Image 1 (cartoon, rainbow over the protein chains, first blue to last red):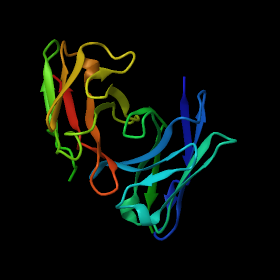
Image 2: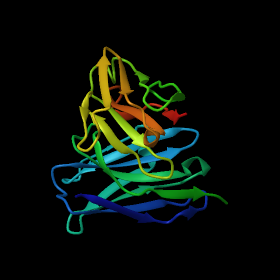
Image 3: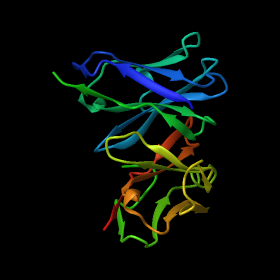
Length: 118
Length: 111
C-alpha cells in the first residue's frame, strides 16, 4: 500500500519561500506523476502542479512564475517551493500520486497547514 | 469561483438516494474524464470514482457516477450516516497549457 508523508515549514512571513517535501513509501516512484494540491475555505481545492519520475513538470498557469517542483529519486521524495508568499498562499497543502497525470489522484499525503502572516 | 460547478449542499435521510451534480465545459468534462473525491473534514480527500464511472477498490456499490456531455453526477443510494462528507468533482482542463480543475464541493448532510 502506497503511503505519502509530507513535511515542511508551517509558518511563514510574507515574501518568504514555502518549502514542502513528500516521501513515497511502499510503491514505485517511476511510472506516475506526483502532484501538489492546496485547499482553502474560500478557494476550495486548487491544483498546483505535477512532476513525473523523469523530472517533467507541469504547473498551474496562475502560479507558474513562483513554483518549482523537484524530485529525489534515490530517496523517493519530491518537493515543492513557492516563492514570494503572501497571505493568499495560506492553505492546507497536499501531495498526491496521480495515476495518469490527468487528475486520478489515488493516494494523498496527510496535508500540511501552511500559514503566511507577518 | 471554481471552474466546475457543484451545489454547495445536499442532504438526505438514511436509506434515501441523493445525487450531486457537476457542471463543466467542453474544455474539461466534455473531453476528459471526471473524478469524484470524498473528504471527511480534517482529512485528505479520497478518490471515490475515477474515469467517469469506475469505483475505486473498496468503495461500496451504493456509490455510482455518470457523465453526459459537459455534466456529471454522483449518486449515493441507501444513504448511511458515514456518507456525511464533502464531495468534489474534478477533471483535466485543456485550455491554456492544461491543468486539473475542481468543483467547489458539495457538503452532504445525512439527516
